[in-house]
Every structure is written in C-alpha cells, then in structure tokens.
Amino acid sequence: MTVAEYSALFSGLLPETPLGRVMAIRSENNPRNDYERGIIAEWSAFANKDDSKDGAGGIQDELRRLFGGKGGG
Image (spheres, rainbow, N blue to C red):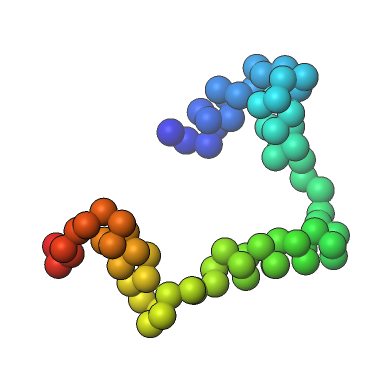
C-alpha cells in the first residue's frame, strides 16, 4: 500500500473522532523545540538500550526460555 492510498483511507475521518485527532496531530508539520527533541532522544536511548548479558541474542534466549525452544534453527 502506498502512502497516498494509506492517506486517502483516513482523509474522510472527522477530527472530532479519536483516530481523526491522532491523524490530525501526526500530519502537523511543526518544528520540534528543544524540550521535544530531548524527550525523543531520551526515549530513543531507552528503547535502544541493550540489557542482554553478552549483547547479542538476549531476546532470543529469553523467548527460548519462555517457550521451551531448543534453538538452532
């Protein structure tokens, strides 16, 4: 689906509806201020933080433990 098709699907939403309000906010083209950039940077650092012991495979190891998988393909 192209962006134009996606946009056309939501173009008829009234801004008074919750989804219409989200779409209105997301389509605004306002420059970010320092406070907003700081929040985005803080969230990105948190979301990209690697909590695994050895760096790689932490999530796979946890899923394998949770679901009893043996791994290896």
